[in-house]
Image (cartoon, rainbow, N blue to C red; front, side, top):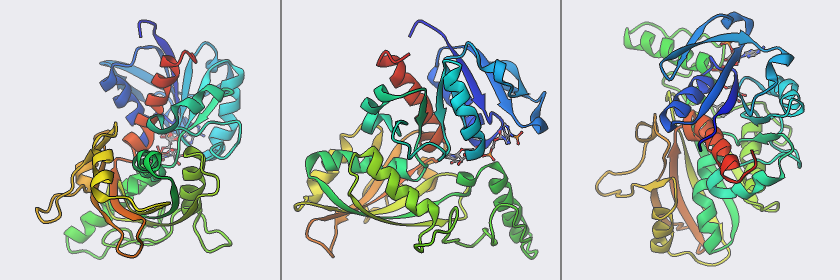
Length: 340
Ligand SMILES: NC(=O)c1ccc[n+]([C@@H]2O[C@H](COP(=O)([O-])OP(=O)(O)OC[C@H]3O[C@@H](n4cnc5c(N)ncnc54)[C@H](OP(=O)(O)O)[C@@H]3O)[C@@H](O)[C@H]2O)c1
């Protein structure tokens, strides 16, 4: 990449927004101009990128012109308003929210799985929910070997998946517990105490008894893997962990899958690292994944309840591969494919 690219970041001060800057810096992404936006609360705040300070501003429509990519990570409502304007201004919006993920004309992409879908973009590309990304990353190469027909995924999602304020909420409650005080149940973000607790509800409730997060895992897995009829059921649980989401995945294939073959496929999958020695107490955990871009897989075994089933455990950093890194990889893939 000899050319430099104009990059805008909407939500630059947020948990994901700050990670965009770190990831671009670490990867040496060729940023020409960098424009950072957040709410009026952050106007004038300085963020560092490549040892230079950049001022955060409030987004105005004319500020979008002349950019190549705009990374949006603020809220669904802001994405719905801003992404079409980005596309009209001639740039490509890489959107981190669920606003466009299910639209037929918006590619939903994990580059290791379906980079070819980027070619059909019309100015907006969506990235999946941070719990879906590692699941499809591990399932796609297995599905290439033997068709996948059913998925049961139970997720264990860290608080950073709900943003910076959610991390503060866990921090305050955990510190109070550590001092032996009663836990302040400040429910600004979560509806219940999150420290030393599990909350089996993420995002809005649905009429069918699932949460919207659980529905997202199902709809997004089907779209990314091009399996519109895949049977999927998910249970999504918020856990008192700061960073990295985990999932217990039960996958059923059309014919029996040897565990050895599944392990060897996953060991050869780009972006995936297998750590799998139960007797030696070696398996991936949130502490394994926090701060890095790897999708970690372990506990690979035959499903004792189904002859065609494989069970595994997958962990990845929701702010990195689950959000910022995936977005930057999409940008890099679009450049590599000549789409920009
Ligand atoms: N966290 C994850 O793991 C993850 C993963 C995938 C997708 N996502 C999605 O990414 C988005 C942001 O998540 P986050 O975790 O980074 O949240 P966050 O930490 O709460 O950050 C929100 C960001 O949005 C900005 N913002 C708020 N109101 C705004 C406005 N009116 N105009 C412009 N910017 C505004 C905030 O600016 P101020 O600092 O000025 O308030 C902040 O920069 C959400 O759509 C979320 O669903 C998150």
